Length: 320
Length: 276
Image (cartoon, rainbow over all chains, first blue to last red; front, side):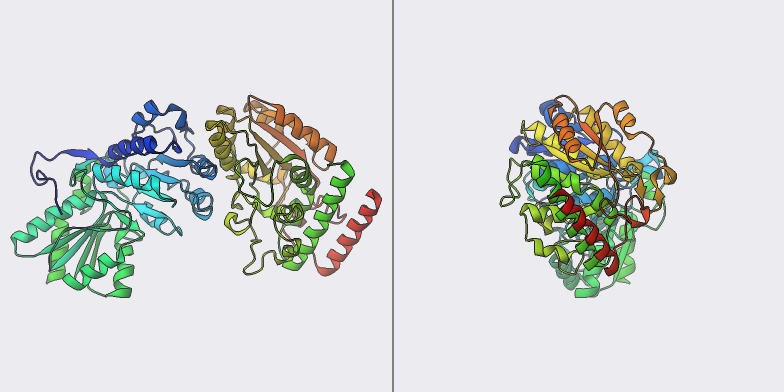
């Protein structure tokens, strides 16, 4: 795939996926008058500023009440709205999981649950705010679409695409700025994984902020003569099982990496396909059943082993 | 609809509730019987609905938050013509659209899947807000229980409705003073629900929820309020119409035996003669 030419240089542009969401939301709202946005006292953090300026009558502030956030969004959807319900991932879908499951999932309402602050990248706020379980608790809900875009451009595309689907959807975003990997011309389709880099020895499957270190790891491995493919699994559900099976057959080894617990997330989802359809050796890299802590984003990713070095090492281990 | 016709309709619904629950072998008779008068007035006198077109864009919305009293909703919907009355006895059976707690997509006329307490009022608020954004005239009626006012989510919605002045929203609270574990005032005292809503900025009305004239008057009053949401605190006798079930919290969630059902139906039939 065509990547940002500055990607592996110091010049690379960095932007948070939540900013891309804010832009995508405005675009979606211009295209469809039924798009509305809600937040639970986090309008600025969830990047709703532009939307509120342009569509004040379509903005709903529920206060610090995430259970109400989810269920009000369900009601809005029932009368024809396309609600984007925003907060931090820890509270949405964390705090309000049952409301999401019953009033959005079981009710089959096209609400878009937007968690702008997921994973270790929340940084200094510490473990209480670092949602590392949100993929697990959303992908288990029947019919729920789970999206984890890798950069701000893809987050914008994912937001626009989500507004057009009738499915309940969880959009997993990040606070921290990440390198811009793709361009506006890169295609995006919900449920269709992207083979970002081809390879024949091992496949790295990454999502969200881990795609960039996965690509760096693949570069490093290339210097050692190891040919690593990289897949961007921006849609964790519905999972592109065909892409996984193809990769497993071609490279015979899979490493997954995610900014999430190793239980129940991307690695688990990929493993469910691999063990049933084409068993090959796998390594699942993620948060090893621990809570995070306060610190700079970069420090945290190093401390908990979510770096290009660890990803490359996981690949080498599989190739031994 | 005339008082007598509504009274007879409520009696018919009560008899069907007994039959359904007996056939199912489980379910919630207390709240269902208690709310039969309110459901009858809503569906046969107040709501703007059209059973052949359950999804009509101009319909009023009824959200049942405390989904466990769905037998009264199902019986009312069937008698109002949303689906055949003979389906009622499939309640809680495998493959039936009459799920133990309502499933929106299973049955025409249901606006929401519910059961887990405390989130129905939020959904009703979302509907009311969405309708106001579009300047639509549909009304939203939300039925809640007193017990679910122990859920924090309910109060989040109460704040929301007041903030956004959801004048198209009418809430009716089944104030029957019982919940699974006992009397509400012993399990977790609620005190004056009306005073609480008043303090939150709602228009408040308090009625005898088993008095059809009271119910009609209260709905008309609530409907006329133009600048805020309205709540009707309806004092309801749980198990209403069946002497041994009335005001007994033990009948919150237990189906009658065949013998108990026969006795209940006999009492209801007798009462019916009194109205005719």
